[in-house]
Length: 172
Image 1 (tube, rainbow, N blue to C red):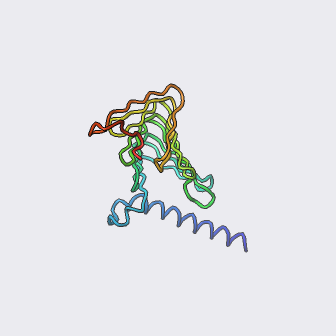
Image 2 (tube, one colour):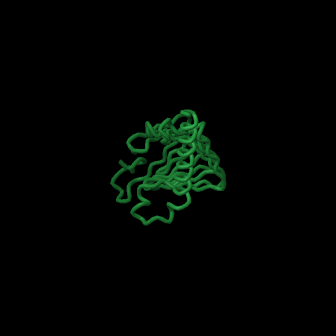
Image 3 (spheres, rainbow, N blue to C red):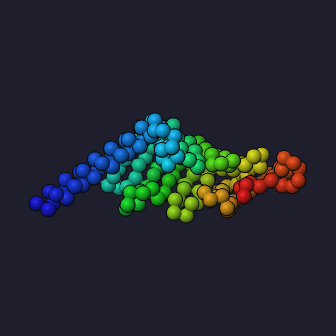
């Protein structure tokens, strides 16, 4: 009897989670603006969601939008923790990230939500205003306080608009 109860509970929670995912993905763009500020919306041509293995794979014309950034790519692999929260994201193929005044391009990007670390590989570049960074690998943190590059790195820094000195790549 207990096994039947657990199975029914699992089916209800899976159905609820899939319904929530469907509502979030398909209807959140239609919510009033005050609700959209707290919602992350992911769109793609195809979605594979594996509840048992705790991952989702978005393929084709992937767009991720939330209040603080926008990401586009060919594929997006999302890994969830035991509680069902996103813990790690990997974007591949023509990755483009916009955050505040920063723009980044690469062939692959990973994002660790726990540390806030974003790693760009595959001819990555990071731009803020006219300032540019090219390297084999670029790491930056979502809070904008830190930046690292590895391999052959090239930084191009232009004077501020008022000509008073060098501009900043991170802007902080």
